[in-house]
Image (cartoon, rainbow, N blue to C red; front, top):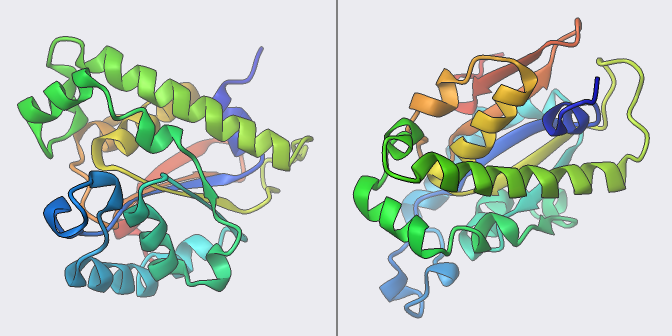
Length: 220
């Protein structure tokens, strides 16, 4: 059987998807959403993440940072992981640029910060977010296979964790599609309204099965 995209990525890396921290309004950042930076609250949220879920994610191996091209996402990873750990951070334009479509704006106006279950109830909502997730997963797979051309034979061996920083319901959409491809329950990304600096951790168990957990619920 042909392996799914998510399976091919996770034969090489575990995956952590992180939503950026709280930001200043765009009016205070040159009037452009792309230029928004973290607020003092966002900096504090990153410090909390650094002391709560980050050490547990690090237990899964070296971190490989990937960010939306939006400044707030780069800044979030630097604040959580540190300058040294993010010096080779890759900017993935698809994570931001593919949000900038009229249909996306219409869905946002209809639902705002809501679980993607609500977005799926809107006309064209599922199709729009699935198309976004497909492009994101294609791009992440391209990165994973370029960095690790041959997947390890054992499911217990991988090259660490791809830590991907991006945006509220869009991250949920990616994880929802990944969970579908991995054959695991999709309720967590479907019904969770992702808080700032929270996210999802996708890992493989010793038997090769996948698991999806909220970063904020990770415990040593």
